[in-house]
Image 1 (cartoon, one colour):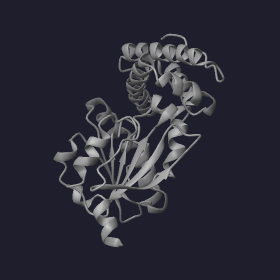
Image 2: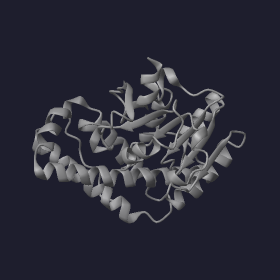
Image 3: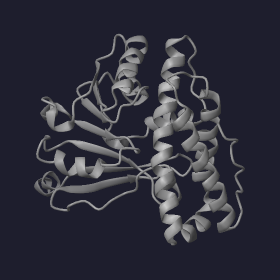
Image 4: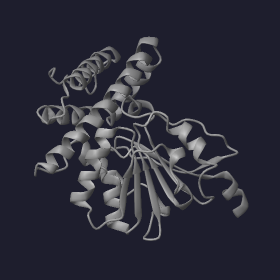
Length: 278
C-alpha cells in the first residue's frame, strides 16, 4: 500500500487538495490489493483513522468549501466518497476475519462508529418490543449487535455483498448467539416483514439511501422511524450527504449533529403520521 499522506490541519486549499489526492491514491491501492486476507488490515485501519481525523477537524472546513466550489474539487470529492466507502467495506471484512481468528478489538474508525450507536435514535430509541432494520449491514454488524444486546429488540440487516453477508452471519453467531438477529441478502422490496419494522437505520455509505427511503414509504408502517446517517460539507468526503425528501411523504423530525464523529444523523417520520397527530 502507498504511504499514508500527511494531514495539514491548517493548510491552504491546495495543500488540502494535495492531501486528499494522496488519500485517494491510498484508497485505490487498498482496494486493488485486497485479497480476502487481513495482511493489509493494520495499514488500512490506520489510514481510515487518519482520514476520520481530517473529516472531523473544523479547521479544514473553509478549505474544503473552496475546493468543493471547483469542478476538479467536486470530482475529487466524489471519487474519495466512493473509494473510502469501498475501503470501509474492506476493513469491516478484515475486522470480521480477525475476530473469527481470535483477535477482536475496536480501534480507529470502528471506535468512532461504535461511539455513535448509543445516540442513533435519540428520544425514540428502540426497546424490547421493537424490530430494527439496518440497510447496509456489512461484515461486522456492530449496530445490530449493540442495539439487540442493549434493548432486547429484534434486529434485521440486509446487504447485497455476498462476502459481507457470510462474514456478518459468522460474527453474529460468535458475538450474538442469544440475540434475535438475522442477516439477509434480499433487496428491500423483497422483504416480507417490512410491516413489522419499527426503526430503520441507513448506513452512511449506502449511495442510494434516499431512493430507498422514498420506496419505503409505501411499504412500512405509519409510525416507523428512520435514522439516516449522512455527512455534509467536510464530512461528505466520507459519507453520502443529506438530500431533500418529498415533504408529502417524509418529515425530518430531528437532526443529531455529532461534531467529533464521522457522520451525523437525520431522523425521519412519515408526514401523514405527523399531520394526523396534530
